[in-house]
Length: 429
Image (tube, rainbow, N blue to C red; front, top):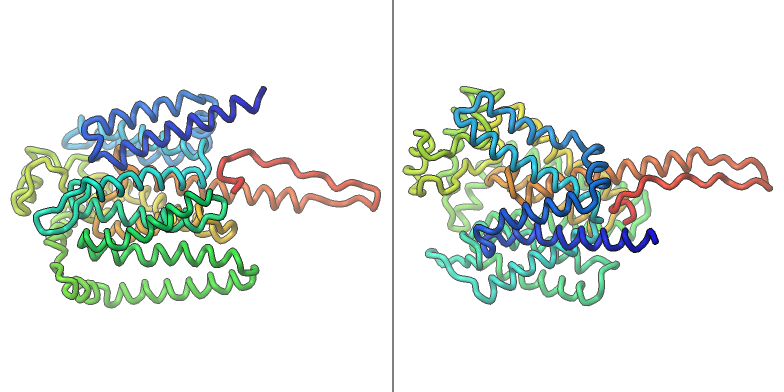
């Protein structure tokens, strides 16, 4: 009697999450209905199991401090109605992200995302179009949006193809998707997306390789990767600008990233004026605000077209200051660190994918703005990755603690069976 409702609830959660993700990922196809579809599916997901929803929100309430702070900026924002309205929408998006982590396992989420992103790829192949510069746009509004979609899809496809627990049909589809992604990335003419996806693919492949290694060899691989990562960070700090300019020139791109360096300089000047609290959430790129109008005119962009500073840290610090930016950094980099630790302890395709996607977010954060704002799939995944990793590590810690407390009392005694840790979908992977 108790198993059937649970199974029905789990399936319902998967269907509703699929609808919510499809609306956001394929927003170019949904059009104005994308936000409405997401809100309806998200609301139904919350109320379909109120007890589980409240439990998830109670456990992970602190991730909601970021949207709460964004709402708070309405007190000093130059456009308070904007800050409050978009802050409320970001809060709803974050709540949905928290609820998803309590209802779906990471494996289910991975397979569902493969289908959602695969629909976008198939539609782009069948009815896609080419932009003015010859770059393939697919069914998306720009080549950057199409390239970002393909970059995420290739990571999901490789993870699904390598997942031993997935059905063989799904794994074959993953192989086909991974093979098709290469030519599509070339058609998108995005050197940045191509360069960034390579190390993320390496993370997935190395993670799956470590499943065949004993503990000492896994630790050795981890140490070597840490050394390589530290060397790359040092190289970027010392000669990053020179290397980036050479790569861009070699690929025929503008070394100034199509004027983004000028944008960054402008953004830094506004951060210097109000470093801690910022101008207010979503209160810079507003029609009628003179500095925004000047930048729109300078870059020949229609007013109100959703322009940004093309750097997550600069763009968000302008609006929510260093206080809000610090909260975002905790979620972004904390999620990557926690997921790296959890993936090392429990290496599997789903965990490797979440880690790779988080690293991709970090790499793109220096030239794009993907988080944190309302109705954003990347914002949802950033929050979800942090929670999945933290919950997984807590579950492992409880298991170790129970094991250590087992003390046999003699040959005829029975070892005490450890209590089953609190059930969390992904902890069973």
